[in-house]
Image (cartoon, rainbow, N blue to C red; front, side, top):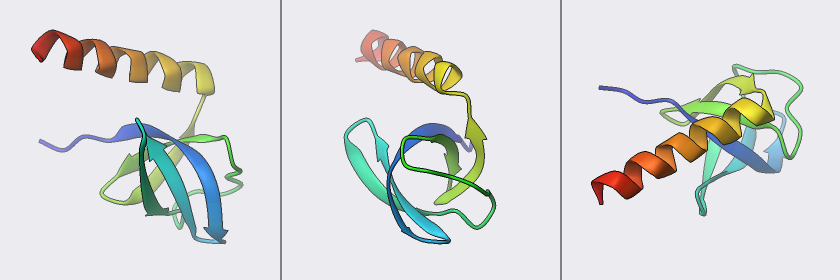
Length: 74
């Protein structure tokens, strides 16, 4: 099973790469598939690529559900 997750962009490295925050873990990803990403945007990340931008409210709801799921299985 593959999972794409929301992540907040915390740094732009160049036109095609950025650093995102995944619950405190920072990871460099490719922005080659999306346009007009700025620091603070949420993107859906899958295998190191941002697939699209995500509404901040929806991203927060999704992240809260992931946190709830992790808490219930831990």
